[in-house]
Length: 312
Ligand SMILES: [Zn+2]
Image 1: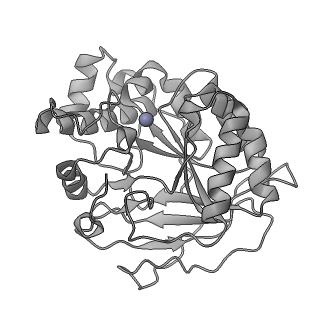
Image 2: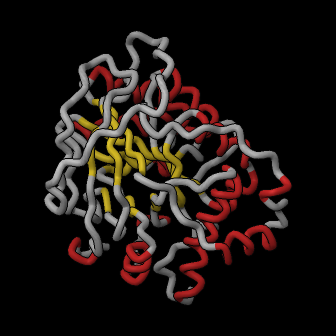
């Protein structure tokens, strides 16, 4: 399904690069300038010094791009064609449907071994099942976004508009509950199905939407090799892109070490995307997930010791 890009921008979008993390290459100049916002913004000062990467051959992080999500910008050329901020041979790694035992921790270990990072689009229910795993994702400095409460396909005509909003909002509230702090205003529609009215709604909520440039189709893969082959073939054709994978899936977790080696060998560089500000959850849904999932209230939980890495 294609959405006219013009629909998607109610407000200004600004992107800028900030510094360099773990990379083996010099910092790239801050030139990520979408057509909508040519004015360069100041670079973000490092929040704290980052521990050096122990792996001298790590894939690393080439640059950090901060997103002003005002108006709900869209990313990923499969659906959103306005913001072409990646340079040749740059990739963004994205992982959907977690947190999940074994596979998500395995993905985290692989990313840590390569001193690199991704965006995790978590399902709200899964966040309530495994909050400690999602906390590990966040503590490792990855960007955490959301992917609805129960992975409902929001183009399903049986769902009312209120039910669709509830899927989005409860997903956000659940991830916030699990982390003990609000995630990024980054959202991916299940099955990349984008109902226009929810695209408009997310715009009004100042939440960025993520499609992808290339889908690894890892959920269809029969083995890890297939995940690698499909991803590298598409990437070599496109030359860059936001890659859609699933930390939920075993084959993906198993494929990731070799896939990251192949990215490095192919001269690809990872771009980290962060949000300028966290998402604002709605109190009504914060309350609802506590009731529905019979979760303890945030105040009954220890204050998270997790510290968000905003920039390296
Ligand atoms: Zn999904």
